[in-house]
Image 1: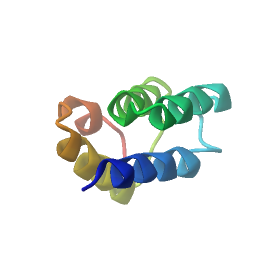
Image 2: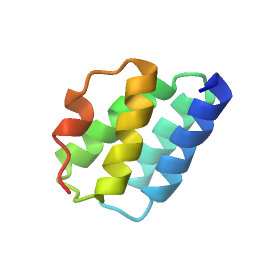
Image 3: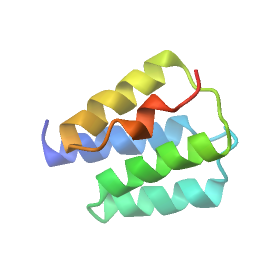
Length: 84
């Protein structure tokens, strides 16, 4: 997966998570991080916010996060503790 592809997929996740319990300002910050070339940090932050706010997400969303996180070399703990 190319860097542009990873960034695009992380931005898609941010858009999909709008309207959930994660504050819009947090999602804006994560979007800015992604556009600044830090999609891994943005994805880690997204997982942290979903966990912190105890947001139930679909298994499909967790799988997409897992695939992206694995491609970026993130620790599995970010997505394994998310609630479906």
